[in-house]
Each structure stands twice: as C-alpha cells, then as structure tokens.
Image (tube, rainbow, N blue to C red; front, side, top):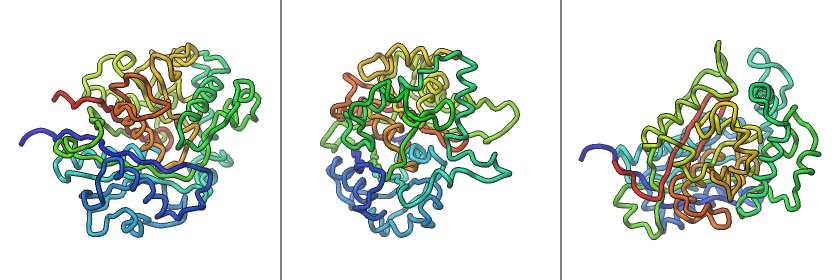
Length: 389
C-alpha cells in the first residue's frame, strides 16, 4: 500500500467542565472523557492500540510525568503511551500526533486525550515568569497578550466594543453546550461592557475562565471508520508550526507561524478560499479580541478587517461563518485540553452531532489552537466526507 491511510474521528468524549471538579481525582477526570469517547465509538479499551496524552506543564498541578500513573485509568497498560507538550496548543498537537500514527499505519486505532485540573494549581502565577524572561507582575497570560491587542487596535482602528461583541456571542453560545464551564444566563452587552478592566483593553467578561476538564478522541483507519455506528469526521489536513517567542521583526498581532500553519492545512485540504469553503471554525480565543485577530491571521478576512467580520454578525451561530459555536475558550478553559476541545468540536460539527449548537449543513470545519507567546500553532480541517486523495 502506498500513500497515507485516511484518518477518521469515530469517538468524541468530554467531561463536564467546572472551576473545580472535586468529585473526581485526576485519573477519574481523564477516565470520564476516555470512557465517553469509547462509548461514542462503541469500542472498548481492548480496541485501542495506543494512547497519546497531552497537557500543560507539569508544575500546573505539581505532578511530574502524570502519564505514568494515568496509564491504568486510560486502559493503556501494556500499550504504547506518548506524551505531547506544545504549551497552550498542546491539545491540538495531541490530536495531530495521534492522527499521524494512524496515517502512517503505525497504529490502527488511537485514543488521544488532553486534560487539566487547574483547581489544583495556580496557573496565573505559573504563567507570570520572573525577570529575565519577561517583565514582572504581568499577572498571567492576559498581561502578556494585552499589549498585542492594543497594537491590533492601533493598526486596524477597530472599535472599542469589538471585544464586547465577541464575549457576548461566545458566552451565549455556551448556553447551548451542556459541557461548557460558564453558563451565564442573562448576560447582556451592557454587563460585559461594565465588567472590571483587568488588562486594558481586556475586561473581566472578555477573558477565559480557569477550568478543570478533559477531552478525548478515538481516531482510526478506513476499516475502523467503516465499522463506526455513527458518521465519522475525516481529517482533510493538519499541521503544526512554531517560531521563537521573541525575535527582531516578530509580528505579535499576526504571527508568521500561524499564517504558515493555516496555509499548510489549506494546501493539504485543497482550500483556496477559507471564508467561503469552510463552514465553521473553532478558534482558540482566550481573550475576546483574538477572534478578529485570528480571522485575519488564518485568511478568513483581509488584513485590518477581521473586526468588520465580527461586527457584521457573520461569526454568530446563524451567520455565514460561525466561530466558536461551542462557546470556545472564553467559556471553557482546561488549558491542556482547550486545543483538543477545539478539534473535537470541529469534528462534532461535521458529524452533525453538536446538538443545540450545531451549525446547519456543516461539511468542513477548522480546529485551531495556539500557545506560548503566540509561538506554537496546531490546526486541522475535518470534513463529513473522506478526503479525495
């Protein structure tokens, strides 16, 4: 046999996400997601040939190399286990590594799983590195990214309320997603606008929560997909790209690695006009202003006009390009799993199994994740039909 094996997502499982899942241990949390993914695929642990695990740095929970003691909980005893880490994009990278094992015919059926238990850590101060790595007292990722948001506003002239529109939209979408962490009933534009300013121009209601949660996917080959009880999601393209955190000429508003990663995914999937050919996108938006920024970075909008797409309502659930119909990272953020949730939600859409936040007729969907100082990117494009080549 020549060429790559077609890869299909046949099982998807998420935990219920919350600020603190004190009802389960870390092994219990990952098993909850894995069990749901296997049940969705109507498979058992015996059907899994290997496990790929992803999470944020170990100091987030203070447990070193947790993959070793999680093997039993994941049904991985006696099976290959591979740990992946690419900062906040790790969830997406985990799915891509698992998909590549299948595509290369190294394994036939792989369980990809990512998780975080932020309640057992202090991620904000864990992300506030001391001098000489960055300025002191940035108070988490928001302190690092806020200057880049201000740079975007200066560059494009985007109205001050753009972030408010995104936050209101995504938190509204989350009400349709039973697994989402934040369910803010009665949230209005006025309430978002009146929320405290944390990192100018990012308000409290425009930033992601800290969540406990896990997500799992079952990926398999063509033969496995043929046995699936439900329509699979087919991987049409996937890529990872990275660049240094700091270098002369780095564009923090639209990182080169993000543009290159998207271009490679589109090349693999045969996409020439992402805005018209992709039906929905799950973008990694931890701070609301990153929706218009990523719309430009990924080629959905021309430079300087991402905010116009947001303001027009095009990215709403009923719009021409729904972005984050699940509620996105703004509503659910178990850091290590956040990227995999984006990939999983894209797969749910093309399988037609997204429930109340389903985009009608979604046949192609983009999953996107980024991490570090906007330096690590992972993306995939999935479709309801097998790739043509």
